[in-house]
Image 1 (cartoon, rainbow, N blue to C red):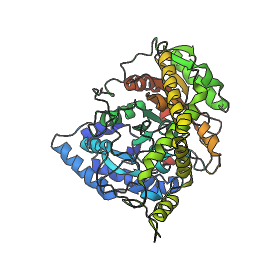
Image 2 (image 1 turned 135 degrees about the vertical axis):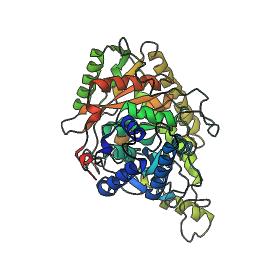
Image 3 (image 1 turned 90 degrees about the horizontal axis):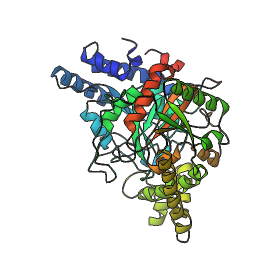
Image 4 (image 1 turned 45 degrees about the horizontal axis):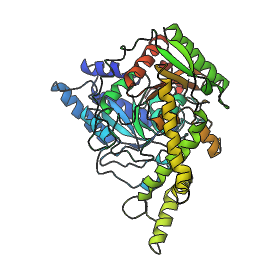
Length: 492
């Protein structure tokens, strides 16, 4: 079969169960597509051919023995921030270019337990710091919709592999929009779960109080299948919540759109820099949801102007702390012929880290330094609480909150936006991480250059099922999520 890559996760699962094709045939199909198409997209850092085929054979054996789950034998791509035993885990950095992980992240282990087949590790902004995937040590990944544009970041590789049909779905991480923004740029569905819903064990840390893993796929239904595997309590992660996991697939039609109150923040649709085409597509999607029975309610989110400065004090401060472990001593990049220990530290870090990572370390270290800690970091944490309270007050009036995912469509590669401009592009996504809330991005159309536009829906705590259900019902009535980039139509 030459069109296996066009099947949804449900169709793949049903096809495997009915023996229409084997996991090995499916895996070989994707590996051939990767070999043919990925040199143009540059989404994979490591392709694990032998591992994938061995896992596929094991999955076929389980299926023959009657021990298969719904996902047994289905391929997946992992963002190269998840530790994978015996496979390079680089976080997109020269610092970890030689690091072979001795263990699996919990998300990876849970995927293996469910029978998923690992195709490989995909590119990302270095240490998840960026919005374009251009800061990677391995070079820029390209957007399958327009190869001279970025796929977004930091989970740009995860978005690109799905958009180019080089994996059925992928894992990502979201510290300030790093699942949702690339999903928007690449015409995909991406879910950032409630903080603590998915284990962070084995994820290379950027900002520990903000990082959260989630699924990226073409549709809400496909994301639900992966969430069933990813979600759950993990004793190895002290921030993991011991809360029962819902069956996200079974719950896709539980939430009714009739009477669903969707909050429309006045401040979000008056942001400077909001592209007219993005605003129009988002408003059209909201009108469609209204036609399907939802009620649009105008709300105020008065802390909007505080999002960017608050995030860009807290996140770099935590990065400064987390990245202090990369010193050239224990593992990772080590400068050659150091004169003394101080020279080892300085050159290992200056040579091993890229410009954006160094920039954020410097900002964070400054914010945590004596004399500035109270003035900057502590104050930012207080404002963070006010942002959370602003959302909770809004949820007293509405069920979900709608916004553009990003103020623009994908940037051109090498557009050389200055760092502050790039940070301002996170205006719609970073508050969700500051408050620890769940949010989802779904495709709702294209701009004048046929670049995808995303709608973001923000939910109250633990409302992942509701968000997936709302988007699923929207996708049952529209076909934006089924649109494919020209490069994805190439047959291996």
